[in-house]
Amino acid sequence: MSADSACMECGACCASFRVSFYWAEAEDGGGTVPVAMTEKVDSFHRCMRGTWSAAPRCAALQGEVGRKVACGIYAQRPSPCREVAQGSVQCQRARARHGLPALVPVPA
Image (cartoon, rainbow, N blue to C red; front, top):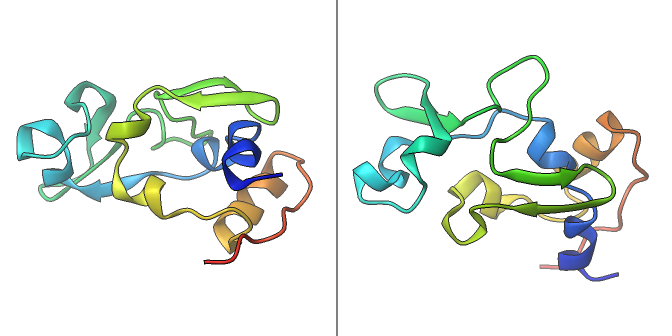
């Protein structure tokens, strides 16, 4: 299974962690992340709407975790989303949180 297909069937990372990033990654700071999909964390950081809660789920996540998912802003997603790799520690923690089996890490 390729990394792309594994991730498109998973989405656990999008429903497990707060996705925080420097405010300038948002459209009003010159970046690409839609401002309406973010919320302010502090003067320098934002997070993806829906991820700053006890039961995080990114507002951009479409579909059902563990079945078929997609990111509604994939081409505009912030850096933390671009940095998560299939099989990484973060990936495995998210999958375990949702009762999904571990994945083999993809070589860099």
